[in-house]
Length: 259
Length: 325
Image (cartoon, rainbow over the protein chains, first blue to last red):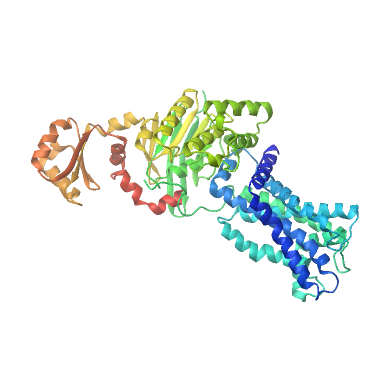
């Protein structure tokens, strides 16, 4: 366990030493929220800022998870990871360190956004805010675990970007963050119903008092989100155990002289 | 009786159809410096990665300190210090932070860890750089930190992959002195290298070529096996070596000793070669670009065992070198 905590601490120290990452994770979603919220204001039944707010917070956490786990690939390329892999550490500790570090970073960026709840036109009491924070903790853990499980078996950050665009961003788009389930065609509705992130966003929306009738109940949303986190962490641990040395190595060895 | 520090039994590793390591059997004793010498793609990095528990052998077994990684890989890892060719340090952390992180991975903590780190900072003369980010260190210093890191738990076995790569001559000498010191303290040191002088400094070496251990023993003993001296002549015309070798063989008959063409040179192995050189020069005026006479080197051992020059072998298998990495 102390190995996991030490690895998590490393993530946070590294993050704080790379200022551009802080800006990169928080600014784009907030800018997007302001632009999309303003743009939809005229054509949206109800309040667009309030509608897009929970999804924006989730997007900040998702971005943080992506940035945190993409570093697995850099760790491997720079050689840091092989040093960890030959240490007498359990696969779960390696996964836990990265996931905990990434989750804390996601929460450091996502939780402060909750002060914007009144600005977004939402209202939440202390219980609601605590509920929202709890949902974010679970989501941060789930999304970082998911990102870790994907990044572990990738050789390049370009590969991760492809997966991000093809899989992670669509997952967010189909979570009820960007458009409500009611207006969607049947096939999209089905996709949204099986998307675990839908329940995380619904739980957050309910906690912040922006819910509509058609959303899944708070209890179900919490349960699915907790299960999402548990399953994803199990997957993250499993990839480390199954592929201890990562992806199959191809091409030359870095830094080797031709002599 | 205690088990050898490292003991491998017929280790093989295949990448697809290509056998990168072919039934390698060797032992390394406590207090011994053992060098795995070979051209790129020879299989030494594959063997290194297997011993470091990063790669599973296709067949064969090995033990570290008598322990089988197939039974308890973490027990084996606790006994290994591993120094990779690409540094396993976090460049955004300080020297001290890197050592503390490794300590936590090894299950060390508190005052014991702090004392150990302090001792290593002293031993490696890096105390004044302890608070500096690793990315600000020179290559030689970073390698020192890397080795310090691998020694945190005072492992009985130290594995190093091409440890002198990227080091200037001074840093290289420091490294050799350090390894000798460690071996004196009872640590088994196993390193890979493609430098003959580095291998020469080891107690024993194994020469790996095309995945096979073609020689195993003390450098002096292996060189003695070559027999006599080695005369090497470079042929005047490019590609003229094979014809020249045949002519030398025909001219001197059994007198010549062992004659072979390697690349653009002809090698003659024989006793008392200094008596032979004048006759050779007389017999083939203007046919040599250069001639050298010397006691056999490890390069001669390599040529003797593989029938080709080290440099040739290195250039031979660029694709294989990549796959074996």
